[in-house]
Image (cartoon, rainbow, N blue to C red; front, top):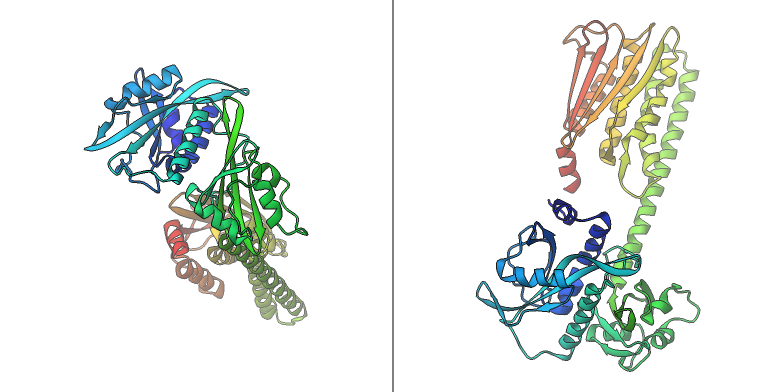
Length: 496
């Protein structure tokens, strides 16, 4: 998928700062489209006399003109002169008469996109066009008139290099207020001159039972907030319209997210737009997720502790066993339990149910150290390559399988010898291949062991990971075991 950055850089005339500016403007494309009740397209210069569309946003409350995606297209001939004039003159250019687009009458406005430099505007980096569908014209409501006025103010700020404001925080889009969620227009004193019905409803639910228009928003907010509750220190800046910020307010168990956009006319503050959205349900869901994540981490932690206790009991029992065969079986069981405990320990430390398997395997390798130090055997283990991130349901069987293979390589491949055990991981977008190679005496081709360890490895790799496993002797000496796991299956299983 071609991104805005790819399209901009492909024209060969933009810096990283230009791209960041265009990204921030495109991020507010939905706001501009909803306020203007029109399609918004961002163009950047391409070649001597043309422009390429790098972003397009359709209005959510009006009919769109573009039913096909035009991102990546060159500007159409009927708009080229207007777009070029706006870019070269640095002025907003409106179409002189209605323009017809696919048998639909439209009105086009071209706004030069000016990037401020060291606080001073001056560099034109593109053009924003507004395409209004005149085919469904009706008598505009007071809300539509106010929305259009807000859009015009923002277009003027785009042309003067005052919007977007790169100093404003880039908060997560989840729960971000939109124009349709609720809009309040403030004058330069912070007094409400317009409040949409949704905005008024949000404040009514928090305990304000009067009209917002004519009221100071900071005084209204002060009245409804509980006196004993701490609030974000940025709140006064938001509700007075002085800073481009976002914050949440909560009263009567209702949470409302606020975003303020100060309005300026060539540096002079003329008021502000305050977008508001009732995010009570979203915040409840987020809190439930936090609680769920904490519970899952605690479960992983307790499972790890229990597994470590079981491993310790197996180790004690192995030491007290008088049978060599029983001691070996208990030791192998202890290592298997410890390998599973490592995965649960890693999962207990993070929020995601994915694990960086390289970290897990580095810890798993330590579990075979005591095997490597067995009498008459000196084994050196090393790993190379990268496993990457794996979902937890695959990390456990893979860790257990590799523990078995490395242990077998030391105990049987290097029995009574000095040698190396190497683990090589190669990962692509489609597959994960792991090779466990030892420098021991090798095994005859086709004669793979039939012990419990081999059965466990086959079950884990073929049954749980839908992969393949192959044992063969390296030419000269040693044994190599190759595991091949399809990552596409892993992704499908995760999404299912």
